[in-house]
Length: 353
Image (tube, rainbow, N blue to C red; front, side, top):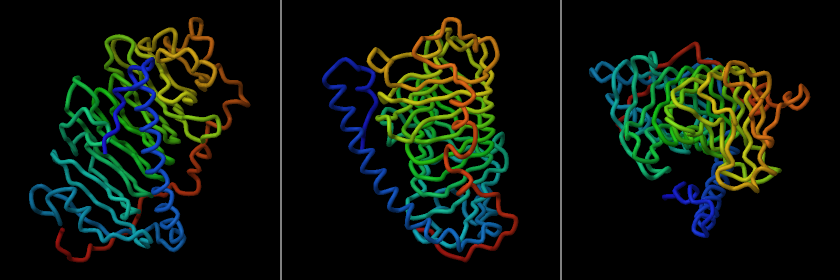
């Protein structure tokens, strides 16, 4: 694989347009395969006992079932029609590994003990698809209380988390890098009480995602961007909603800029510190996108929420306009979000691959 946003930073060149179209083709192929996998998995979801999960323990001290997170994932049998939840409990520690949840292993929960003492760390950059510390290809995935870091630094794209499957939820996680921290790639996703940190386009992608009560921290010294949403047509469902969130940081940052021509981002009931640039939004060097993007704010507050100098092509949403963005219906969450299991079974003994 290997699509790159490098070309997108050169929006006025023919090479940029060619590379952008290449990205769309690759992304659409992957979305199609994900939809097929998700439909197969969803057919058996009604038979799953969501209160009970098979427990797999990861502990670097050797007192668990596995020493590494990826070993625990590989021990789970592939099954698109999985009728069993798996709960991987990661004991406190620093786990230096690159982790992938494959598409044929749905209904996994990956849980740290606390984000402040359970770390998944890798150091890789440049390629937006190959660099992620944690990549999710499986549907119905849940992540809890885990810090996910890419420590590549400021030299280029370095993804900490790539969510590339439908129905993924993240609770109380810390997600940090510098550029392209969170590749919110495709599918319906939910983030609650998460801390997300970066400088350039640090929440980007084509997903339909609801961020609720999350803390977004910008490291940009001068006019970076929090979001780069990639919606490419007026009929595409995707978009990012930030509900009851908080924006802090240093320097200055835009709320978003359009990776796709129909980029859609809404902030509602959110606190903006003075790190938010007065203009609010950036056109990414292409004035034609002003006519197609959907950038909205609704009842936000704080020194950065003053809309006096906002770009005219952003919206102060009315009550009616905001309604569609203010609940889990935006991601169909009432149909797939599930509580944490309350009962656990011992994992059957098996050797990792």
